[in-house]
Image 1 (cartoon, rainbow, N blue to C red):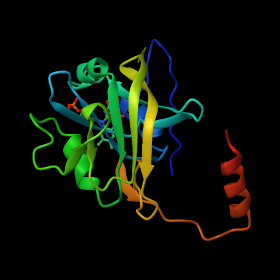
Image 2 (cartoon, protein in one colour; image 1 turned 90 degrees about the vertical axis):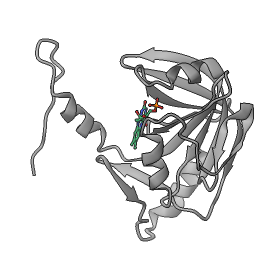
Image 3 (cartoon, rainbow, N blue to C red; image 1 turned 45 degrees about the vertical axis):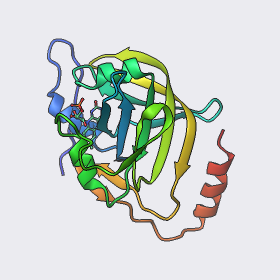
Image 4 (cartoon, helix red, strand yellow; image 1 turned 180 degrees about the vertical axis):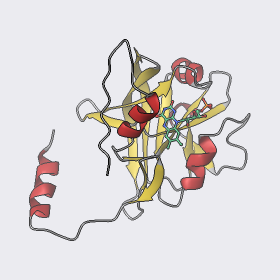
Length: 188
Ligand SMILES: Cc1cc2nc3c(=O)[nH]c(=O)nc-3n(C[C@H](O)[C@H](O)[C@H](O)COP(=O)(O)O)c2cc1C
């Protein structure tokens, strides 16, 4: 086992691949974030930078690369929908991470808030107004104010961990789990 140490020295910055690998140790869910461009076209991007921010008011965020062709549409539309994927939807993750002219051809979806495409079978959905965008290095943070949320309590999430897709396996029940549930309910 090797412990990699990265030092962010301006004169000799670390290998960005290693930084990416370090960040990848934080496992996430996988989302497809969609919008409806002002011209009417449907836009969708795979993203794992999604995060909860605030319960009251209801705020979430994600970040998009400055170079992403879809960035302009997200800024101009002022609305977006976060589709949280199930473990059966890894193919959709790959699909929406691959640039192509019309990512929605042959994809089962409906129109949601502001005309944003809503994917059939998503584990959870957060439909948002764009609250504000915040330039942040080589990404732009998009803060969304949730106008509607829904979720399916039977399906299982698709996870992304160390650059690979994964599925969640619950730890066996331990005494602390009921405390954890109470703690989580009490947050906010
Ligand atoms: C699991 C996974 C997570 C990703 N997360 C993000 C993200 O949070 N932000 C981002 O800008 N791109 C992310 N990407 C890359 C985009 O999906 C990819 O660049 C896509 O082509 C962007 O769409 P566009 O080319 O239509 O703008 C991710 C890709 C994968 C496979």
